[in-house]
Image (cartoon, rainbow, N blue to C red; front, side, top):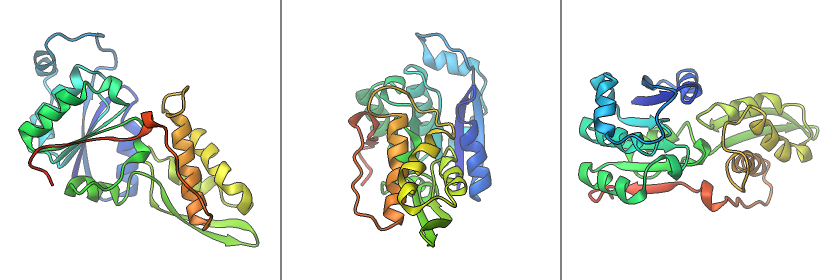
Length: 241
């Protein structure tokens, strides 16, 4: 599978590294300027002037760290025209455009669009490209081996696209079983997690997801509660199941 990543400054670089290191997916990328105007009157013209590789848009899955409400919908349009199956938009709705605008794009091109505040909420959705990617990357799923009340080994079945889950798996070894869940959440945040600070979601949700993954791996009775702002917004084209 071919994964296309739109980077902007440092954002998207860790995703590319993680995909290359932790999967056999082909990954290609294009770079947007780190500094963009707050308002872009003609996004189509602006993106045209960047002279981006046209082959990029035919990727099976495109993940865009454009982080701009004018540019992101234009990225989705070009992805749809290029034949991609799905577009994943990290960074939250405030930098993605609007749901009605993205819904029109999804309907026009028959694609799936998902807006994630944090990258570690991604799960299967019934779209082949997303499901294939989410077998390896997304909401953390781990297996844990415990010896003498301590974490002896951690296997990552599915990890956060930024790579934080593998960091947690390495650093948590040797911790007491009862300390492991909160420590897993803290280690994720210390990775460092680049999710937004403040409020109930963002970096706090990332920590909670890793804490929950550890609790489940240890067979504990647990429940995951995610703030509304951190829940994925899933937008399906009208012809998708």
